[in-house]
Length: 194
View 1 (cartoon, rainbow, N blue to C red):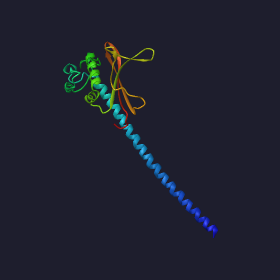
View 2: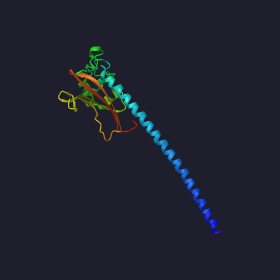
View 3: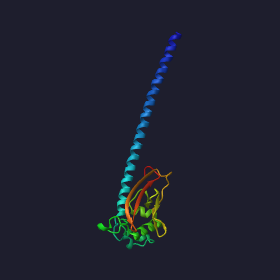
View 4: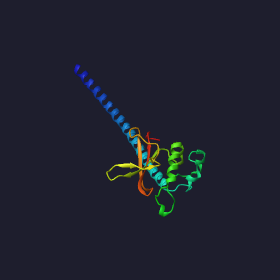
């Protein structure tokens, strides 16, 4: 009789082990599904951000719309900014001016962004934060930020490498003040799903 009780206890233990193993496998399957789903969503969002940074870089190299938008606004009067359909920094559409930036448009864009970053973000039709740098590669391997009126030629909101969850960068070679420079468009987000 005592040996029969021992066998039953062993059977109960094996059923417990089998049920806990099944529950463990189900829990791991659910966890793997959610991990895969979140990873897929983040990859798709990163791809969307990268495509958007390419679009913004291409738009900024264009002259914008209207092509003389900087002369139709007062950078300190935000009510005039509605005249700008697309911010572009290029001088004109002509082939000889391809990728040649207008200093007046750069100054206007920089001032507009300093005065009201959110409004320039909406004029660029962005859902991510943006930061545009103009840099020159030095021969010694370091980068130097281009100057405009004595200050660094940077537009937008700088990002923090620690808090930014997603970053997409697109570079364009442009001609600024008779020098080849890199216009780096950086889109960033502190949230993986903006």
